[in-house]
Image (cartoon, helix red, strand yellow):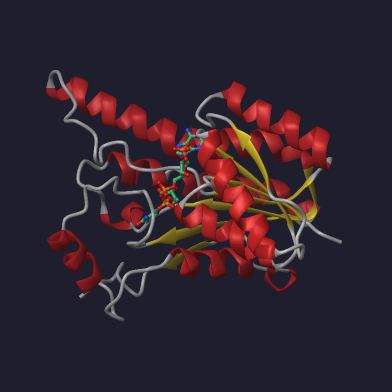
Length: 255
Ligand SMILES: NC(=O)c1ccc[n+]([C@@H]2O[C@H](COP(=O)([O-])OP(=O)(O)OC[C@H]3O[C@@H](n4cnc5c(N)ncnc54)[C@H](OP(=O)(O)O)[C@@H]3O)[C@@H](O)[C@H]2O)c1
């Protein structure tokens, strides 16, 4: 029987690759993001590519940085699917990237970056997880997307700090859900190409630097991350919980 797999940020980048991987396994995938047109196009493309081998991919548009958005996903998923087997929290991003420079005093600019990144990375993951928590099936899986930035910083520290905040949340959640056979793990990628993350703000020089920090001399791909998520969601990973798995070609230790 198909598992119900909810993927936030599933319309683009890493979340999309995660959705493709689970759909390829015949799972019932639900995509969540803010832009309905992006979600619907991705859902239709994945469904078409599966050519009948997977249930139709569904889309729910919601802003997960608000409780109302997370509750809406619960309402729709609860009504359509009843429960959730796998929750992948891939929604997020660095609000400081590709945006016009924040205005105001240094404190006002810092407040904008830190509040924005808290909403984008902590609230999107925590609110959706809490909204779906009691719908999680025994033996379920919760995944959260962190970043190499949680170890190495991110320029202003605000993106990195909010990703790092997910680590103790995942550990506490793993302890709370362990008795139900549910695992909770964090996947922390390094630089991943073919996503909307950088919003056109990644220079060729910066990209060369990021690739140069890896030990295998290449960018990560959305599929690299999706395969790790797929493994952590498998029956074989039942004893792996409360962990942070880095997927970065060795770049956290760097050259
Ligand atoms: N790309 C990298 O190099 C990299 C490295 C390390 C970690 N990460 C992390 O990996 C995750 C996936 O990012 P990505 O690289 O695949 O970038 P991406 O293509 O920009 O994907 C982020 C997704 O999150 C959704 N999203 C953002 N805010 C949301 C909100 N408030 N409510 C609902 N959905 C929201 C976006 O859709 P809408 O705009 O339509 O809402 C988008 O589909 C993120 O958590 C990111 O921080 C990325």
